[in-house]
Image 1 (cartoon, rainbow, N blue to C red):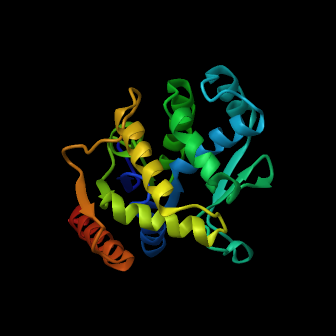
Image 2 (cartoon, rainbow, N blue to C red; image 1 turned 90 degrees about the vertical axis):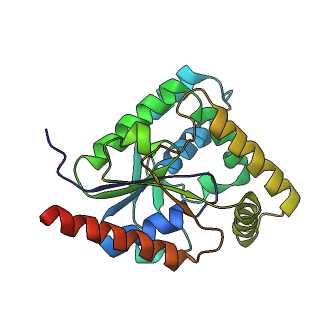
Length: 235
């Protein structure tokens, strides 16, 4: 069956600006924004809350299958800086999944192949029913291999660490830049070296380095590209 909806797949390392850029691109185009990384954060939060080992794949998968995970654009009452609202079994966990503790737990959980299979299936189902901007670590080749536009969003590690450090400080977390930078480098290494769906640049991806670009510049680049592609598709 021919693909009916327009799919934008965005991959890249942590703190490259994927979330903000993807959300704004989706807003401008009227597409649905889905943060796949949030789903893995939910899995990590579930494991932590239930006192599970991060390698206990059967228990984590069982919890995921038993849980109801919902995501939607923030309502007026929810506009507190979040990019997306995440609800787990009726509880708003949008900020609970963004703590540094969950950030450190998410990579080990995301390496578990059965966990990835469960969540990839959920992500693919979402993209079959509407135009989407989907971002994560393996979207361009695993989740949406037939995406109309594939993008790899990146930035230097120092720029990304500064962004991540600022995010944590604004949320009241007392943490040094050095520790954030050190953890970011470890996260990059884990994401790129994992055996299951590692972070990588596919040949057809449009690589955008955001180090010296503003959010609006990146968003406008992508929106302009999509509109040209849509016009060309119309003939």
